Length: 282
Length: 293
Image (cartoon, rainbow over all chains, first blue to last red; front, side, top):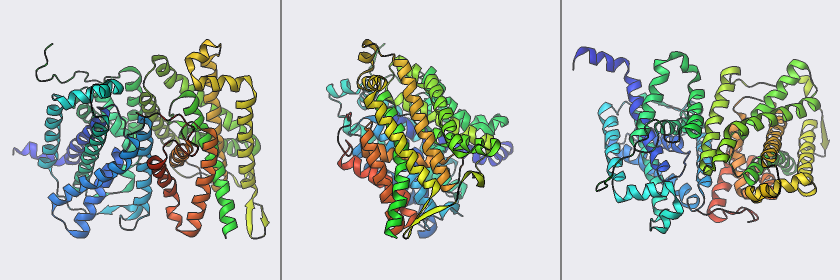
């Protein structure tokens, strides 16, 4: 590796990790938004993944691949418990229940001795690196592009445009909804495990309300027409506060503003194009 | 011990009910989940705090003043964010998202301006004396809490049931288009409902602020968890349900803190919320028009 590149990677290491991890989080938000639902539990799922993986590594010394699988399985289970009752109802219920999940998990992390209370867990070994983080991001992107070109992708888009019509056309709505939420929870959990294993330290406040809304702002800035939109959104919103230092203190104000502006004035985000489908003409 | 826990439970239950009332009113009438509602809880308490601290206003003046000011903020937020969406007939999740963004914006702006330190009412604003009935202690501010909560609820019910404006509000809740055809000024009534909701949220914030005397910008966020729980247990948009669910939550929290563990207190609401969603999504009375997707 050339020396300048080595230096660059070393000084901006945590920023580059954050780009990959936030990209994964943006994709986890994308899956749910792509079927016209709104989950505000992405930060909670991420926190569950981070704590599960950190505890397995620290207390049991479990091998990393196993840790990663567990960090996806636990949030998936939480998604089932929250999603199964709420996804039968209108979208508002999932949104409210997932915000609730985030709050209650934060309270649990703060009050439990196992999770180190408000101080969190520290001394987590650095097991994740560029290869695995960006490999996972690339894999997820490829998978989503393939899915959006397929029959499943068409069904998802139909649900987003008009659920009733999609249901009439034979889309199995409950199955799509719960699958999307579970996949989304797994991706967020994986991002959480990576986060824990590159930053060596996690605390309950990393996964609160601010984080949940920030993840939504990635997706809304980029637009959800294609899986690339949210990733580009994450890229911009992660880099911008670093480039524009004065923005740093008002980072969260800015993220909130992005959501407001995106919903009111640019509902398709900054990347409005959609993925073409196999066999589609014109 | 039991009597004291029950009294504490009723006092916090009264504030939960008051808080959830404005939240469920917004949903029931305006058909939007307005997440900025938690911010009104914080701004109400903060405005009251500044009024007592810098202008030496007694709490009985600061309370209505701060509540009215917050009600006006709620009207502005509704006008800027939700009216354009309503005009476009945007889906309900769009309004949820826009208020979510606004919530983060407003909270982080407040934090950037005044910090996250816990602030307290000046000692002169709060009368520390308490009544003792047997072994039960009730402070004057707690009596103010319960009294104000009951007064606000009674006023709201009288308004909804006994006035033309209340009739217009109920018509709007039923169907905005038909209400407009029947001569209801929908914009005006919408602003009025936002104002009333903002006032209710702010009052709850001031009362809780007085009870615990610890105020900071993010206090509304923790309260929203209780708000969600109460309006879902009571049934979305159901006023009577919100009142009863609020009291139940307060009582159960008090009993959990007294007999199980005080750290588990805050999880009670969420547990009830999930149980309600699993077994009775229509809420306590099953009147709320539940939308199945």
